[in-house]
Image 1: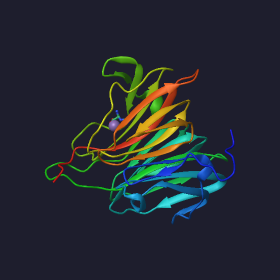
Image 2: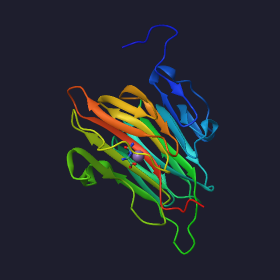
Image 3: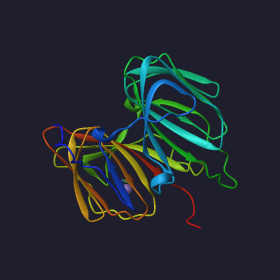
Image 4: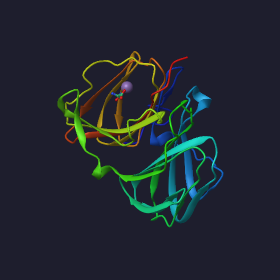
Length: 247
Ligand code: UGY
Ligand code: MN
C-alpha cells in the first residue's frame, strides 16, 4: 500500500534502523555494472556491517577484487552465474555464496531483475584458526531446526558454525502467530531483510509493522522481538557477528 506523501515508516536511530522499499535511493558500487545498488545498512549509521541490495539488468555484472572484506551474498529473486575464488556455480533464488577476505568474487549472466542481498564486513582473524574458505550453497539443502524447540519458529543456519567464521547468516521462518520466545538484548549486531510475509518488530522501545522488502539494522544491545502476523508465514534473512571476544 503506498504511503501518504511526506510520511514514511523509516526510522534511523543510534541503535536501530528500519528502511522500507519506498525509501530506496540508488548509489554506485565500484565493480558493479548494469545494476542498481541500495546500501541499506553501513558504518555511516554506526554499524560494523554493510548490507546492500543489488538489482541486476540482464547484461549486468559484478567483479569484486580481493580485499580484507568478506562478502556473503543471497539470491532473493532470479538467478546468475557466481564465481568465488576458483569455484563457480549458477545460483537461483535461495542460492548463496560466501567469499572470504583475500578472495575475489564475480557475478555474471543474471536474469533480468535478479536481486541479491550482500552482507559485507572486515574480517577479524582468529589466532590459531585457519581462515574460512569459499562457499556456494542453496538454502533448500540446509536443514532447519525449531528455534529453542518451537516448531512455529524455524531456523536455518547457512554458514558453518566454526570459530574461524566471524559472521553468521541465517533464515528465520515463522508461522502466523509464531514469535521470538523472549525479548533479546545482546552484544551481536544484526542486518536483516524481510523475505516474505509480515509481522511486528520490536526494536528498543518501538514496535514497527514490517513486511517483505523491509530492511532492519539492530546495533549491539538493541532490544529485539518479532511476531509474525497475517495469513502466510513470515521469513527473514539476517546477519550476526559471532565468535570473537568483546575486548
Ligand atoms: O540469532 C539471533 O540473535 C536471533 N534470534 N535474533 C533475531 O531474530 N532478532
Ligand atoms: Mn538477535
